[in-house]
Image (tube, rainbow, N blue to C red; front, side, top):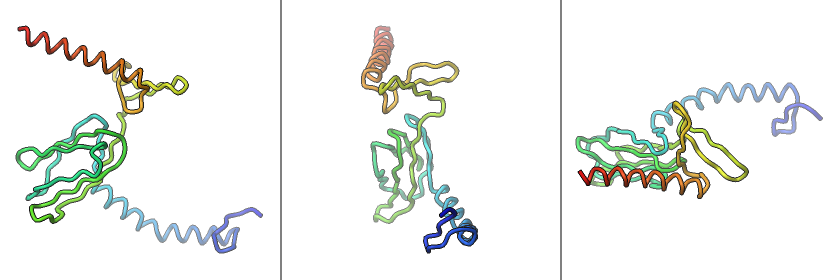
Amino acid sequence: MSGVFNGFGRSGPHAVLVAAWVLAATAPLAAQGRNSASSNAVVITLDQAQVMKLPDGVATLVVGNPLIADISIQAGGMAVLTGKGYGMTNLVALDRSGKVLEQKTIQVQGARDSVVVYRGVERESYSCTPKCERRITLGDTNEYFGSTLGQTSARTGQALGAVQSK
C-alpha cells in the first residue's frame, strides 16, 4: 500500500488534505513560539564574550551549566557572558528576595571561520580567516590539542618574560 498514512488508518489524498489542514492551522502558533523563544535566546560563539544589560535590581545570576557558558557581573548593570562549551543552557536573573526578573536561553555554537580536518578518528581544527592556522577547539584529538596549547603557552610565557625583564 502506498500513500501517506495519517495515523487513523487512512492513506492517500484524504490524509494529505488532513495533514495540510493541520499544518496550516498550527503554523501561526509555531511561528509565534519561535519568535518569543528567539527574543529570549542569546547565541554566542565558543571562546568569545558578549556584553549584555541586566535588568534593574539583579542580585543573583544563575547559569544552568557553567561548562557551557559563564557570566560575570560588571559595574553599571552590565554583565559579560562567555561561551565555554558547545550546547544550550539557561540564565536566570533573581532579585534580593529571590523573584525571577529574567530568564534567557544561552546557545553556544562553534566559530563560523573554523575548518575541521578528520584523519580517521583524529580531529584537528583550524581558523581560516584569512589563512588557515591551528586552533584548539573542544573535541580535537588530545595530541593535537596538547601540542597546540603547549605552543600557545610557551609563546605567552616568552612574551611575559620579555615584559618582566624590561
